[in-house]
Image (cartoon, rainbow, N blue to C red; front, side, top):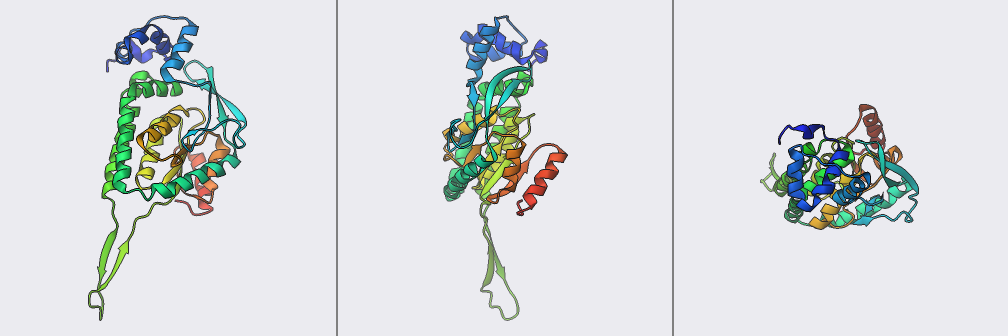
Length: 307
């Protein structure tokens, strides 16, 4: 990509430029943005185009069992403002899950994971390949969403975030096809050679992922792809600052063929993360964040010997 004036273009200006470029189509728009070209538009135009470009609803909520959870379901009641980091503007309301909601989402994942684990590894691998293809196909849309959510340059998210996510899905799909058990012949005094032992690889069950704010989609997929490839289910809690692409990825997995409930996204703050880490039905926790929070995660997970 060209290192032109586009490098200094804030995300708000990018969406303003889209107001006069949308008729040209996404590929033309992306090309002009990469060349550092810009136009002007009204605030109302920019807001309308921004929501059209990244398909933002007014309110977002947890994604459970293949759909977004209604605000009236369970005990979700708290709201948090989602802010555009480039402008400081409040752009959405986010419905936060409570600690008691964690039981529901883990129960959903546990039920769905039992079926997912019975699907042959080759079929699971193909589903992950499908998801990678969808990510590549929606690269521009998801890149705009990631830039909007994190405040990072669009020319970076266009070539790094979605591509690294789809690469991870393909890699783990390939790895999962070759992971098998082990059969070992045993011998000893008086043994005629008929003794043996074997190793059988089995999924852990429900896993939890807790993501960071800076590379939300990449971090989400790097946690989810290994877990799903090996037949596990995952409850993923994105950073409360940048939840949008994790929700988009949950939709992609459903479209690719992952059964509802195998990958759930729960929106929340530290209390929800703590509930995931200490829950008896979660058997592994993957965390990205500060050392201080990591110590708390390790302590909570160690209470019932999670990996």
